[in-house]
Length: 367
Figure 1 (cartoon, rainbow, N blue to C red):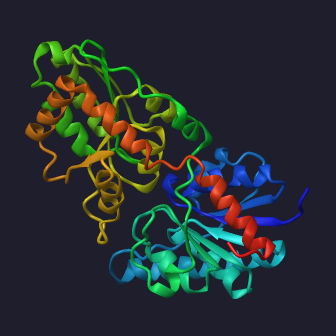
Figure 2 (figure 1 turned 180 degrees about the horizontal axis):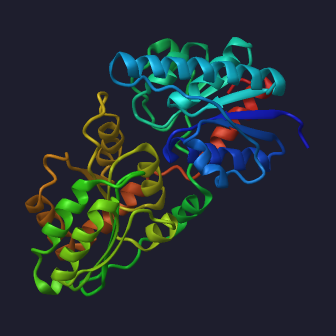
């Protein structure tokens, strides 16, 4: 049993925390000790880290205006002080950061203490927090073959590992695409990120209601909605005679992915990783308000490989969606072929590859 301690630094949303959880399980299976430094939002995912100690620190996101930036700066400074105290006490062999401002304090504190660090970047373009830490990181683990936003000096230290997914999602990689013939029910899974997406509740019921009755009878929709959109969407589906299960949170994503024929979703890094690992075709509607358009770049990687389609939010109209779904119902082989191309983008072994990288750096090997 190794007595080496690995500290994982991840917080904010599930998109940052769940890859850390997948790596934690891999490292524990190798005999390492694992602890996690996170923020208040990350603590909501504490149930994902069974038998793994969690340390909560402050995290600062630079908000709007002078006041927002001041509050963010103060919280960031406090987080760094808290992280430094934990790092000094725990003396980890390595610290792995998963991006986002909540991961910054622990990685920064480790670098100051001359402790090796690895950065994992989920998106196709490096995020701000990782970009500020990249020069002193031992390695950058990338979810995509070509990470954008880094210079040549950083590129030589970048290794393509993929984005770690939960074990139950990774297990879907070897399972076949569900049968979809001319008479079978078509199951559509709609996910809008951690809070749902109003655009899906606005457009999808309207679009699908315009299908011929025989097509509407074949649909089964499982859709994540915002609380305020639930009732309106439910009434529209019921009026159209479309079977739909709506909720604010989908508990069993792996089970839904296993049985679904088409995913309609935002294109956050974790969503793209899970859908492609499951080998499911998807219509991705990137969140439009990121300055660096990170979600569009994530989706483009899959679309360029033939594993899905990208529709901008402005282009995600009832007419456009209706045309696509009708085509899929008429030509199910399109979805079947796209599913296999999506699967080719999946990386079910990403947690193992990232675990190998952590092991190599801790052992002083050249990885």
